Image 1 (cartoon, rainbow, N blue to C red):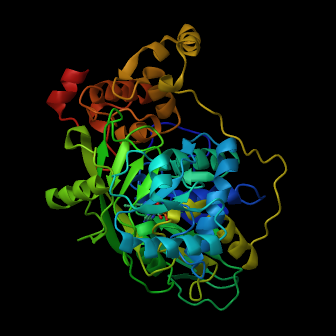
Image 2: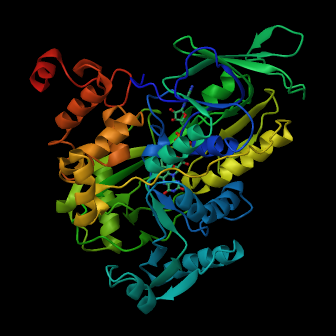
Image 3: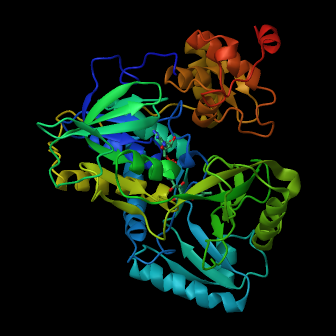
Length: 511
Ligand SMILES: Cc1cc2nc3c(=O)[nH]c(=O)nc-3n(C[C@H](O)[C@H](O)[C@H](O)COP(=O)(O)OP(=O)(O)OC[C@H]3O[C@@H](n4cnc5c(N)ncnc54)[C@H](O)[C@@H]3O)c2cc1C
């Protein structure tokens, strides 16, 4: 539980009655919450982790897809196209790294060009702006680091990159600024529906069409809130949450995507996201210039053993590198910093977003695999409409403020601007993370915003994300968190729960 008392985070007892509760605070829940913050309703987000964006939304490719990979008969394709177009305005309003760097699909054999032409036609039908079928010469001009074996391909200039966790943090900050409550460490375990004039029934499973009751929702630690409407945006665990509410029975399986992360100094960094020609089951393994300057190679697409199986394997990582090198031959093992994996919540081909036919006043937002990040702003719109059609009164809130403060980052500042900040606060001059150039002031800011686990600080500031992966800065960050929060060394965690780092002996050293 956060040591800070932040306005609207884990509010004290006495404020437990809401019009809408969103279960899960990944990119879907965060967009829904921010959209609902525009109306005169009381809304809450219930998140089981210690911070937001600790589920699938923390480990993905970060691509704002170009709108040509899926046929628009699928809901996910329509939401992807709409979501993509919403990012410019979101970036103007919120503080998160975003760049429209463009997307290439590179064909390495003439026989792949048929599939490229198919994607191009699909993109044209989907209304993708500026999509281009490229000759060999054109694609090599767009990306000179591509293999000389490239025979042609596709270019979608509207594709881009975001830092996914910073996007979620900014959305949640905006929602909270506009009155939404965030409950963390709130694992939804039980739910009871009370219809007017009747007693509570747990996991009722009977949607008579009358939505005028109220849900009582209980967390694993015994906390309770009540809400008239509930949105299930629980990612990999949306099947469990649906069962808790007596909603539809379905099974979410986890599909693992493994990556290599490469140092920002690599010479192989392309200017645009490079896709291979996709297969029937996957978009393939890509070379991704992250918005913050590093390079990702991956992901794989394999059935995971469990919903907690984030292990990477030497065998798959070898395949990733081989596959990346076919497109960009200068990729080198020497530039690899680390490997990691993300888990896609797989349900069926399409997203499952609709009002439950079984549980009253309950909306399913499940199976949000790729392109869920791209589609997420449009998912917020779509779910708002479902709630409205289900009877939730949505009257606009006067004074809704769309903006979140743009915070400076040391590594992006000119020496002149940095000097001005140091003069006001010397903590700007104390570089804590040397690899990513993160100052003490930025870490303090993260902690004061409630990101008080090591991973929370990492995702907010990038400290521990560089070449040394926290080897030099972790203990300094622990000390700052201890100083800012008053937590003792054995209460500092990597990502909440039991993920404590320090034994008594080590803790004494650090103090
Ligand atoms: C390898 C990989 C690559 C991807 N690449 C891209 C890409 O480049 N572009 C793109 O558009 N999309 C991409 N995606 C898809 C995208 O990451 C997901 O669609 C998106 O992050 C899903 O967000 P979500 O909010 O639905 O789920 P999540 O982020 O998983 O959020 C669900 C939240 O619910 C919480 N929760 C679960 N159970 C409970 C409970 N009982 N009580 C309270 N809280 C609970 C979890 O802790 C979690 O925080 C990729 C996915 C993967 C895995």
